[in-house]
Length: 203
Image (cartoon, rainbow, N blue to C red):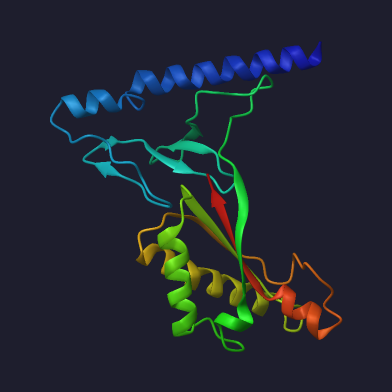
């Protein structure tokens, strides 16, 4: 009974919020195109679009592969019309489609990609068929937590820059440092496996 009341209250709150947005004109991109403004532009990651005083919605992809609409004032919601029976959005498939052994692409303590590594990455992203990519960097556990997170992020960001240079869509970039090892950090072989950049395909 409590669950039903809670669900009903959430539904009512959502309906009120949508009605409020409609009343203020925030959910009327078609009207914006008809009164002298250009058609709304789909926003890319971390972008906001304002023309004059009007807020224009854009479509983005969350790191878990779900399409969302985003307004400049921070209001957002799921853009997909299909939902599961319990109300969750139907999202795109996300799977690891590439793992770079960072020892082969970067020098120790560096996030500059080698020329050969860059050429391999350009070919990978040029030939890719994914809608977009989520790129995450990982390290072994030898240095401090802060240092490892920064290095792993910089390496992931370097890979993302290569993807963007050939026109691939980058949805998110993360540096996890030593938080998600795939092998032990007690052996040289295990540490080498943990030094990696994972590329996830969103389809």
